[in-house]
Length: 216
Image 1 (cartoon, rainbow, N blue to C red):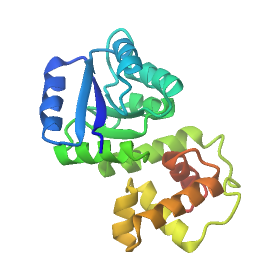
Image 2 (image 1 turned 120 degrees about the vertical axis):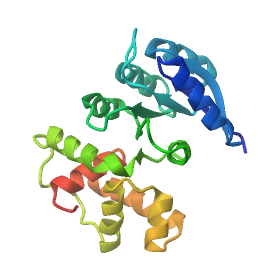
Image 3 (image 1 turned 180 degrees about the horizontal axis):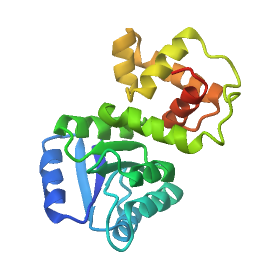
């Protein structure tokens, strides 16, 4: 199996160096490049084609939000994980709206960072459990005017509601499977069904709609 190609984007060289050291112990990871700002990240991503980008938000030249938006437009298969210092940073929400698939605090344990990268590489969304509730609450507040109580087009089954509640807590498909004693493939099928019924583009939007409809 080919290693997961990772691009590091942060304006602090020491932080990038630390990330490289942490990631180097995982044989399934390959750091293919480093960028000190968003503009450099976009340029490198075009040539290096990383699968996962670890993106700081507050950087010179081009910030992480704008860079995430550009990457999402140019390379839809590239998965951006936002790294931030504060769990109440308004820029984090802008980053997720721009297309980031993950939100991780910089002081998170190294094993959580590795998990986030693997989850993102599988095409899933990763929200650190300690901040998932805040992210969902903030998105709900910002989108309340545009989301109606009729957001659920088709009723969800009891099992789908169970899974949706775990999604809203930031759980990955693997974690959901372990909690509910299901096969991971079964969970993935349920998640696909949930997204379709809620007309949601991803897990974060599904959690928001579910919250506004009183399902979680």
